[in-house]
Image 1 (cartoon, rainbow, N blue to C red):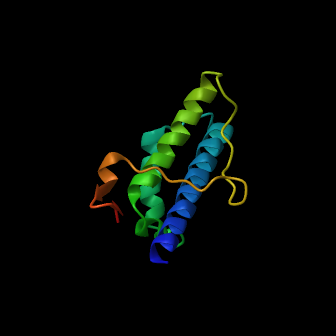
Image 2 (cartoon, rainbow, N blue to C red; image 1 turned 135 degrees about the vertical axis):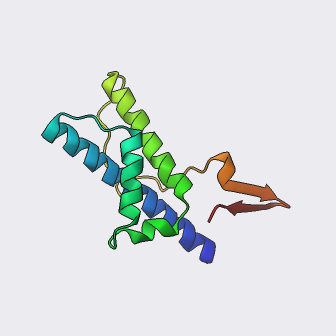
Length: 117
């Protein structure tokens, strides 16, 4: 049961970070005509983790949270290159629960998978 709840929390945190970053980037463009890149959203993530409201983000592995920001960056690159539509917010009900871990964030040994954090 512990693993299932940990994964569920990770999925929710990934969705929250993606939506927060999308909102911040959309606001920056609509208000100031300023493009916000991956580096700035990564710095925002660090700041979000230090707030009382979003402190739970620090309890899950940072790897899938950073990957969510990279996915958002790729979505914006496709949008600005006119290859895709504007990125949409992730919904709890309609979106598929997913989290991407890089190679350094997990280990597979003896038939068992060990995720970071």
